[in-house]
Length: 175
Image 1 (cartoon, rainbow, N blue to C red):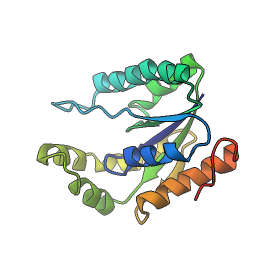
Image 2: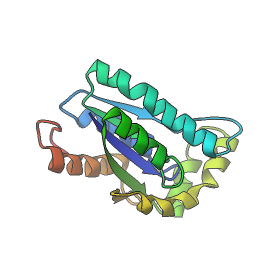
Image 3: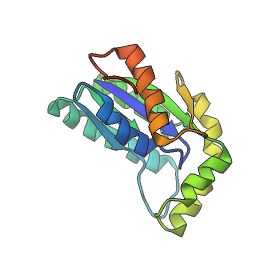
């Protein structure tokens, strides 16, 4: 099983890209979002543990279903959730690959403010735009700047990289 981890700051488009990308695979694939919606948000150790526990619980179910690829989206950064996820992947024998979506602060603000999750949801995500700078620190991450890309273009960029590595038996035409 391959875990395609899509990481980045809140508002960069991780979840939507994951949902689009899952349809590009020629093998059974699934997508899961690991960013919990909790109130009050604290972003601390307990939330990172919750994210990793979700991955630990869901991946065996997807494997039993027959998934060859699971797209995992979330703010998975070094010193936060990354180490926990990496441990879970190792314990479950899952091969992870990391894609880091980046966007400048203005593009992130526009995307976040366009969401319909309510003012509290928007303000909390706006306050975490600085996390974009940490995306490049994820070991082995493949960076994609989405600042000027549409969702379809960003999805195609990830699909092209996956296609180049895995070939057409795993992934149809990247475009």
